[in-house]
Image: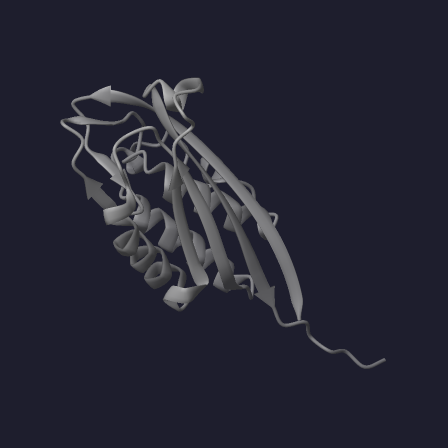
Length: 166
């Protein structure tokens, strides 16, 4: 079994007049959401980058550029699904995902179960293979100042090696 580890990171600025979507879940945040070409779901972008990185296939900017109008306001769950389909075509399966969202507000704990379910479903893994956590940065940095939200994700990909006899 060939195993590969990937890491992903994403950040988006908070602005008024946008929906806040994390892990494919719309979160009530008084009309303040993340600025981006797509739905700006930093959690799913970090997960997608971790998966693509583990397979050495670039990043989401390469596959879904913000210069392409097809991805304007795109649903990041759909983009993640496209990433998983690409990985399957290369013979990979997702082993597990561990992700952390960095946000001073809003409180994300009530939304985490649905985020995990969304990621597990799209990545074709059991729920216990997906961890999503949220943390504040105690008022420090841009996330602590409520200027943006960031996310980190790590993943394990698995691929059966072909056995060749000489």
